[in-house]
Image (cartoon, rainbow, N blue to C red):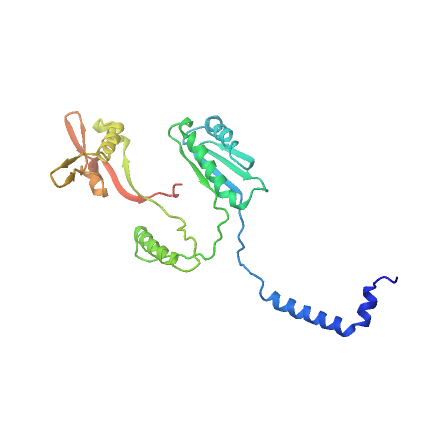
Amino acid sequence: MKSFNMSEWALSHRPFVLFVMIMLGVIGTLSYGQLGQSEDPPFTFKVMVVRTLWTGASAQETELQITQKLEKKLQEAPYVDVLRSYSKPGESQIIILLKDSTPAAEVPNAWYQVRKKVADMRNTLPSGINGPFFNDEFGDTLGNLFTLTGDGYSYAQLKSYADTVRLELLRVQDVAKVDIIGDQDEKIFVELSNTKLATLGLDPTLIFTTLQSQNAMTAAGSYETASDKIFLRVSGDFETAENVRNIIIRAGNRNFRLGDIATVKRGYTDPPQP
């Protein structure tokens, strides 16, 4: 029995083979135009940075008291593949890399477990630290960068307008996130002269304690009537730089106005604090 020969069959049915080739070419051309396209394809970035600040500590103290403790706890997190740590004076940084086999749907839960485990052992870290801070948003892509300037406007006014623009941009379709870069917090600076303090016999600690106690938020309680509950609020907290200047510092039998012995001015943190 003679076996089937595809080449011989195609040569003897040329019109049909040509028709099939043309149809496949047309279908392929039409299908190519329907392929999905994305300027920024979704990609799950499986890296997180855990950063902790401890002002005044040496690199060795930071390594022993923060980095090693965090590393030991982070090893228990699911899907963790590699931990890379860097310790320097006043700062600890740990980079967490998940396994390549980690399903994309499980990555958010893995980062949740990292935050949870660090929160569970947060009380074992030294007091006075800032953080730990978590950064897992490496997958964000920057679409557009806008700069807001204005002659004659203060930074606070520009910040207020920038917040308004941000809210409007978030209403635009397909806009997922809008960040303000270079944001600086407003602060009130109190500058003291060591010479003047020595002349007046004032202890700087006394000034710091007075400012802290004056601006402390304390509950004053409430009063209940037959129909209402009235809350009592303690006033006197600092709202403006002028309030700080007018605070009275009592040392011995003498009273001093802070504005007379120190320079009080409003400014901005530079660089921005994390």
